[in-house]
Length: 181
Image (cartoon, rainbow, N blue to C red; front, side, top):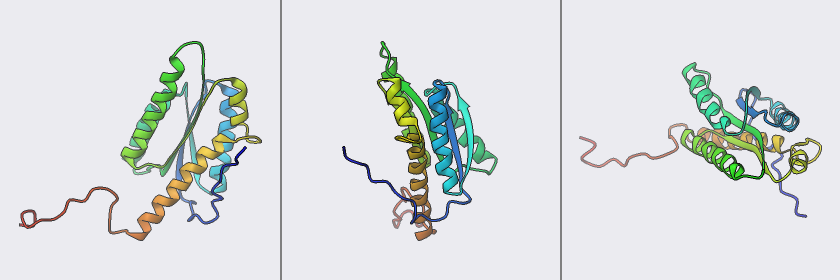
């Protein structure tokens, strides 16, 4: 079996002042506990601050992220990154495909639209045993992996902002003689 290469985080800029929103779905509580344990340990190791919010299931995670990110920005206390944690186990109906696909799509849409680093730790598995193995900190630690992914993208975002503080990321219209008048 091939072992994935992991970012050790040793070359990252300090994330000591980072506010990380963790939204966890508690549908499978024992799995959620392990995912959260891994995520909060990774965030603590980066010396960042975690704020944990609980929702019933995976489909509610993107909604909660959108609401909470907007509220935090209004209060001038924006989140620097988000970690989504949950579990979807295939059942006898097509509901699994809807929940797994739509939650992932909505989270990616939010992340790209808001340029918000986001670690997706929503497990999509066939069995509870697979979920347990992926969630356990002592095994695959997917909660920790999701937090580390969000932190890595946040570090990238901060590094790029520091390189060119006079420029924004995104589309900048080209000036023409007509627009300069």
